Image: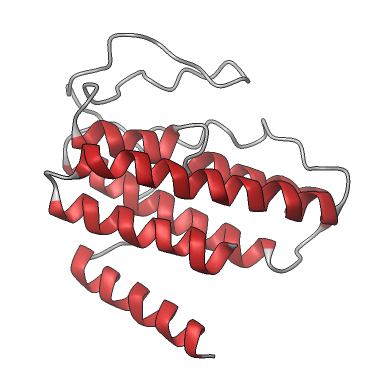
Length: 178
């Protein structure tokens, strides 16, 4: 119970600090700089079109959203389990959290003038063959998500707002989703 209260308190504090976190999910248009080398998901989705310049804090936010261990991919994985096995906990609660995390990162990028695409992983992920295997696979995914935030934290260091967001998102994966 104390953990739930602490998690809710952290979420409320972060929401207040970030302002209105109900980001508009529709993409916006921008002339912001794009990354020079194209990359793609295993499903062939280009992840760098319109991306911030490599090495910037905004590039770290882009990676946290669009990367293989990022929030969009995490949301698609939980959605695949729900599509395969129905609305079961903890998948529906964690999916809602991943969607919120995605909205926060998308809002950060839109504020910086970048176009944020819809989730390119949706419909590209296959659920594991059982809920037990799904739980094991997604636990590993959450651990990779934590490691991703650890790696991106240095890149975001100059942006206090983004650093605080990364700290919160890492904590959610580590303390709540796992």
